[in-house]
Length: 126
Image (cartoon, rainbow, N blue to C red):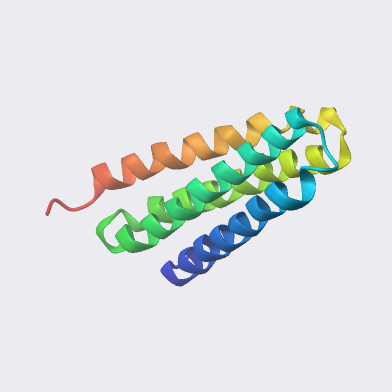
């Protein structure tokens, strides 16, 4: 993933995260249960954090092991799509079994941060 793609993906995740947060606060409050609204809020929070993570990766990419930085970005984006996506779908549909795939997204996010640590470790000292 190029630095430009990381920036675009991070910015879009953040923009959509703000929109999803506003929708949850103003639109969903009247139509879903309080426990599902909390699920939605968790999805938004993790999306926003990892949107910032992608921007961080883009900013630091030239100082990191390039291959690992690309892997970290892909894992981070994939993690958001699976983790937050499954929670959004669960909230909107009420189908609780969708929560079964959420941990896969969480594992991808954890892996992204671990790979980022290795990318920093392998980077040229400076």
